[in-house]
Length: 264
Figure 1 (cartoon, rainbow, N blue to C red):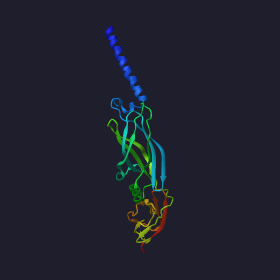
Figure 2 (cartoon, one colour):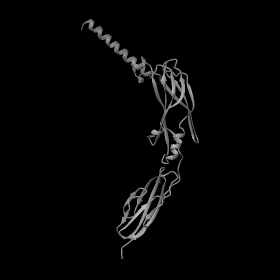
Figure 3 (cartoon, rainbow, N blue to C red):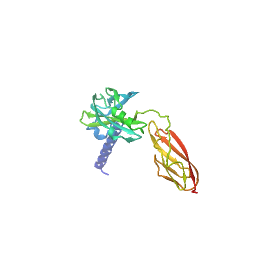
Figure 4 (spheres, rainbow, N blue to C red):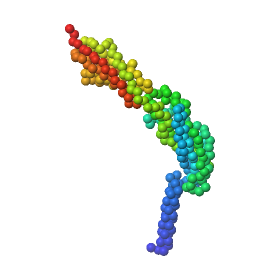
């Protein structure tokens, strides 16, 4: 191997070592997660802390402190709200931007917290969410994802989630069981084959019934508030049981007896 070639190899190894060590340095400063290009076109690295969460009747708010950990300022334009029930997004409640301007100063040194900007009493929900809960009795909880939106000092548009699936509204614990009620047409006594239309339309619950389950007493079952008409083909006495369950898991029952006789 010539001395010239050996010198070139040493230079390549040295350059690769510098790049490797530089990458480690970036990683320890939390810059590597933003990508190495963040060094040359830096984005504001915003952090958010909760300082208080308040729930009251018809009201829920949070207090925040927002700060930068690099030397880029951030101009907040407001907050984005998304609401979920049982993990499913409720599109009609989404608020793309609730305007609330604020300023976050840059950090003096990379990796250290800059001056904190306080946001007091940021609402977790608005009247539209309360109205939605009032008209959707199956809802047991509403959660929200709130993101801050703005532009940093380098002109980058940024969005950062500050709550993810955070409990916003819990309508309350429902311990009251539903009241089940069986109706039967033409009645509960007949000659085989005896066809009966059962219904549970008079069953009630203060927050709505989630399911209706039927046991017709002859080894067959059904579901729904008005199940398909049922025919008894043998004489005898059959105990029909209706089970209704509300959205909180509370259960109510009703029982009737169907009597079937053979034709004389």
